[in-house]
Each structure stands twice: as structure tokens, then as C-alpha cells.
Picture 1: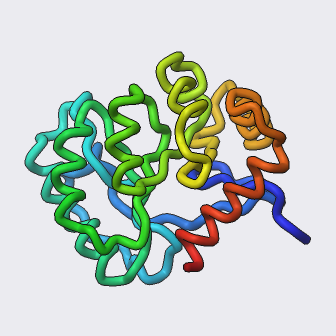
Picture 2: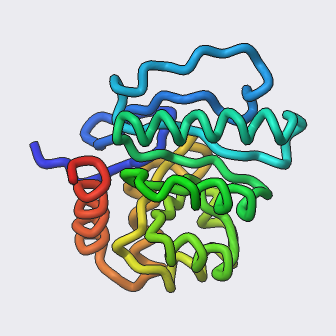
Length: 194
């Protein structure tokens, strides 16, 4: 059966929807004792990143983020990032890891200026329910290259399922769902199979 939809970041996989497997330590847990998972056994390293809106020490978060990036480089896996109020620090750290297989900012909510900096580096932006509620992020969705776009449900909150996310993103971009799905499949193949 051909997979029509790809949900690049979900906590609730759906039947018939392709979702990469992930392993990682969330930045909210950066100050806890942890053992890094076996990243060779997953499709993607993450969620990892920086969240300066939480009360976890920033230096602990940075150390964990760097460890994830080092491991992702070793096992040649892409990373999915959780970045909140820390874009500048995240981009500075990521700049030292130019050989990463792929970088996906999950649940992207931000301005065109922030998106442009990611796009310049060929980082992917994944959008989901919360992204779609932000007027500035809807502008990003409309303007960004489709070749760097993913869709996600994340925690499958009140926006429903991945088909609904695709539908709304296609409407914002003024393309058909089929065209969007083809592009996202090409993006997926480039990041995960290339």
C-alpha cells in the first residue's frame, strides 16, 4: 500500500501514515540523570534542542543538545529539534555540525526572519496544529520553499489528524493536497533515504 501521508513528528502514530521512529532526551529532561539511547536503532535523533521557556538550566540543555548532535553525526541520522525562545543559540551550535544528515525544526512557530535563517542553511521546517494558529507562521508556510517543508501532528491536539494538517497547509500555499503530499514525500526520501 502506498503511503499518502507522512507525519514527521507524532506521539500517536496512525495506521496508514508513515512516521519515523525517534530516540532522544527532551531538553525538559536535560538536568535529570540519563543514558543516551541507541540511536542506530531509530530513524531520527530527537526530540532534542533548547527550550528557554522552561526552568531547566540552559547550560545543561546545551550540553545535552551537543551530545545529541555528535551522536547523530556518528550514526548519520537526521535530527528533529524542539527550539523555544532559543533560535540564536540553536543556530550557533548547529553551525558547528555542518555534516548532519538533516535538521528538522519541529512545530515551527516563528517569524519570516527566523525561518529565512533556517532556510538559508537548508534546514527543514515542520508545521503542525500550533503552527497553523500563528499568523506569522502562516506567512512562513505561504512563502517558504516547499522543498523544505514537513507536516506533523505532534501530540494530535484539537486540530485532529495529519490529513487535516495537509489540507490546511495546502490551502495556505494554494496548491493541491496531492502536490503537497508529493513534495513532502520527496523531502522525506531526501532526508531519510538519501
